[in-house]
Image (cartoon, rainbow, N blue to C red):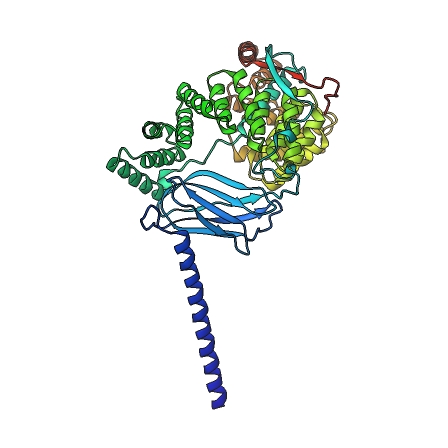
Length: 562
């Protein structure tokens, strides 16, 4: 027994020694990597910031051995690393500053993360996806680059001028026209709005970083890098107006620096200094062409009301670099300005290039709806909802289209059922599914789903008491049941939460008339008539103020139906 006891102790000791040796080797390896990655910058030892992440292919598989290069804006020697067996990489012990990250691997297209600010003691996660050179670039939703020739094949749309906006494409009813325009505006809202803003109340580290950057500028107001770093940091925090003076000072110190010039233009645009932003971009364009410059100029032109120039610039950006955001923004701008045919062309090709892009499918659906192709529009947006069933955006679009149609497609209602199944606590999900079931009824005598519809509407109101459209629909249901007292209550609630709801005023007037309350009925009808006239005038003015782009096709012989 003693021999066994001694043997067990020796074995336990050997395992402990082995564990210590392995840990030591691991620690030495990590220190060596940190020393390599965190070598002195400009002759000084760096602090504790880090950049880490993973590199994968379009299928989500790790890419092993990819070369990662991290370049500081100050021009110092770049840091290099290779991805490990899990596709991971890390750069540690970095100084705060502005960096660019590049990833290269044989048989893959290069991946780039352009200039980003790294704060002191900040750990930034940057994951990248590389696309194989052997795979058509249309197979990825966000490839590093797409050849212009692959996007701009026959036929091509070119903007020729402006014309009236009221008679091109779409359905004839006023309800559908309004829905079409609402969908166009919501499609534009899907465009990315830039980096997420930091909330100082929830980001003490960011506040401390800003304090240090300001102190650095105070110590060396003539230092280009100090002013540029502070300016970029303020832009990322959403304080563009405060960033402008520092970036202007940096521009005076080094007028030829492209990145600072672009950041200054971006800051002026975000701060509402649109004329100055336009001048900044035009100065940079005089030195060299670039997709990001045309895209920013398009945004500025749009804000200044130069819609024709804006669509030209969006188109130029997509021609130079047909990546997903540039193609989407071009299509959504055309759609916003009542050009459904060319918008459909752009989204159709964008969908071919980026079949996994949910918002490209939504844009395609919205443009099809604007052209009058209701069923096909529903199909495309249903496809978008299938890409990410948990995302609310496609369902909201389907709900909007549902309101404009008397006979909804069955597939649309099925998707709205999935919406409420996945998000039962979302008021809009309950409302839109209730509306879909209501519109599927064959006649008022069809009472099969009335109990479920009523339950869905009540649940929507319980979740969001201010959801006026749910009150309106519940009022319609009550009126059909001839429960006029409850119907009037729901119409009044709808008006309480949305005083501009024309239909609620009209239906309320009808019920007052049935009850013999003539004065109340007359009052509601006067409100309805006034709102209708004001609405018509406003919408007509908006349609004329927003230019309609006339388009031409290089190949007129090709059929233009989807």
